[in-house]
Image (cartoon, rainbow, N blue to C red):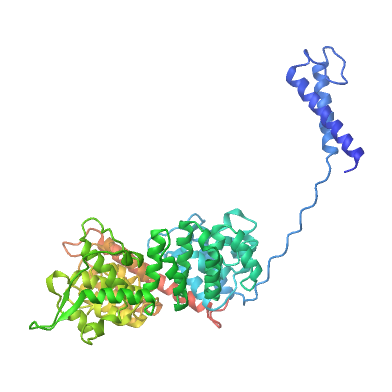
Amino acid sequence: MSRTTATVAASLLDHWEQLVTTALLGTDRRTPPGVAPGPQTPSDLLDAAAAATVRRRAGLCPARPAERLRPAPEDSRPPLPHAAARRLAALLADRPGASGGGRRGAAPDLMELLPQWLQAANARGYAAPPQALPALLDAARGRTDLRPAALRFAGPRALWLARLNPDWRFALRAAPGGGPSAPGLRDPQGIRRLWQEGLFAERVTLLTALRSRDAAAARALLEETWATERAEDRLMLLDSLRAGLAPDDETFLERALADRSRNVRETAAELLSALPASALAARMAARAAACVAVDRTRDVPTIVVEAPHECDAAMERDGVVAKAPAGRGERSWWLGQLVEAAPLGTWPGRLGGRTPEEIVALPVADGWQGELHAAWCRAAVRQRDAAWSRALLGEPSAPEAGGPGAVSLAERARLLAALDAGERAAWVAGFIETHGLSEAFQLLGVCAVPWAPPLGRAVVDALNIARDAGSYPWSFSGVMGLAERCLDPSEASRLDALLAIPDEPEDAAPGAGSYWSEAFQRLVTTLRLRGAMLAELTPGGPAP
């Protein structure tokens, strides 16, 4: 802007301010500049203001042009087949709040099928249609469980859009490399700069992404600033080491055992105990082994327990919490922590060369069985040991349906997670055949999708038995919802016989027959829809 232009602009602004001041004070107290006093002064003031407004608008200087928006990056993945693209649009239109959404009667819940659709599309390496990205980001914004799969499917264009809409900024935090200044994982200088200067959420995302690519580099980055991090931040950053935990992490974790934060110390100890060859695991094994032995002098070999009499400083440094919760004895509390942290490989040699099944079958003296087996359960879950998990689960048809160590359904579910998918499905199928569906919901949740045929048949047969018995139908709504998402679509043809409204027994819940019929209709419709979805995503599937 030249000096002359600036002078003119200042003069116009001064004239406008004088007119505004006169209007506020009133023309009877102040005469507007350039207007003669008299009865016409108010009208002359308005005329002058109108003229000044025109001059101000005409005299506005043009603003500097904004930087031209860079085009969205290309997505090199193959495009979706036309039928699959139409299906995606229908699934996204059914989300809560979208027009046409909502679940009625026997109609499938399309939004619950979206996670499976995204998983299948990602497995086949398709790119998202550009026109679907806004709805896809809106869906992921409302459901955090959708975000990993949705952002992977949406690709780089979603991050480009997220930088233009504050409602979608979650994508920048959730996706590695999503921040506006986030470096590539092969850019050491950029990584270091973001680690030193970035927001905490950006640093956690960076560390997690780097850990999956180069565990040693991620650990070195954490060590660099460890001493200056806040306690709550240290805890979250330390938790990132769970991914790819390896013996190389032991030295750093041993130093973390001396951290001033108790939570950090406990997390470091937990991670070290998951490394069976670590020094901490060896120390815990020695302590636990000193407490548990086999008494061979009895008629039947029996496990005897001598729980610790104190929790010394060395135990506390290794993560043992000294103060027991309310209602727990101190000695049993300390024993449980030692056994839980000891490598499970300790026990066969300590207890006469027995297998896990033989160890679990031994009687335990003086009422220590529950405490000891529960600690072995926690150790099997932490160490993901299939042999011990199998032994502690026991036979699914056992009267207590969970083996001697599984004290709750939640604990059984965690033990099942250590088994391979086929064995897991077979165990849960056996449980359902013996005990029905009333307690199987948590167990079904850890089974691979789609359910293996034996598990699918067990679920359908149990639902059919409940239906014929006139059972209260709403008690099984959760299992029905799981079946819609997890049964193999090929099972749909087996369910046609269950679509009719059954005769209701005299003691059945009112309206139970209609509910069961409607629920099975929805289940069959959903399974066939899932089958069509997978066919549309398969090369050579249905034509557009």
